[in-house]
Image (cartoon, rainbow, N blue to C red; front, top):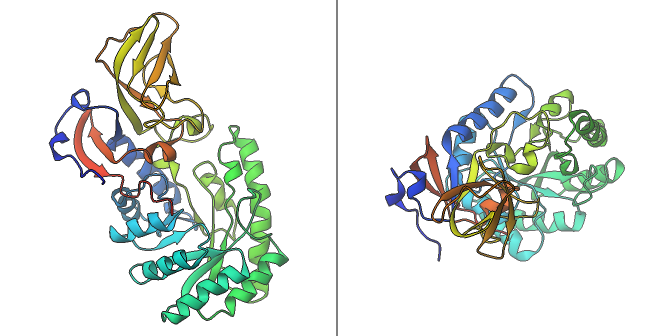
Length: 366
């Protein structure tokens, strides 16, 4: 069972909310969306933002209204939620493999414009056969490994060979390439990050040129993220960027130099116990992810450490200023995985709730 949005929260101040809960600062969110839209407004490269971060059609719609050419989803489940919310132009950035998922992909394509990716000829053939049987021709990108070593075919001749096979498949329409350089996103130093990005873009662009020489389309060459979005326009072959985390940011991205986006996401917690120079809050592993390190209390000189599923510990070096019942905002270290722990966003302006949005794609990992 998924709890419905709480309309009674609208109008309340933050300190009136029950905890733990997820807060989204709408002013900061809008400034982040506007800043990214302005960056791409006068460039040949376009933005196709990744919805795996925010997981809600509400934000996807705001991105499309600001000029995004579509959105990305990591999983079919996310894409299904976006399509149900009226979002189209969806690029599913991970390979769709197996009969169950292929059936769902075909169903998705019958209700929204969708692009799929492949890195294996046999898997591509299975998708093509199903699409053709349904009377469809799905747009498709060849996924290229540009250094992350997660998914993707080798660049150059291997990618060309797969592209030539895809181009002959009746249920697929080759549209270009995907090559995500996720390993470069969180490099702190801008020059080092640019160098790592360039090392990934060189084989991707060379592969795009190779396809063009053989008469194959490269209408879409999709890459990039929040940490490298500003470098994408340097490359003639690149057509779009898949940035996701810029909408809310987090502690990990806050360390990355040269990014101008604001932190718009916090988890509100309550102090439930005191112990000397420490305060215990009601937000533990089930409310705040720690895969990218410890979260950080907002406007407090304190260290957060998890103390089990339901609790966290805030430790102060120079006295504990918090009383039992006090509310504390905690900034996540990783926005994507923290958002996925919550059912709802409490959307705020100037410290007051103005809307409650479902995290509609929460848990849609299939």
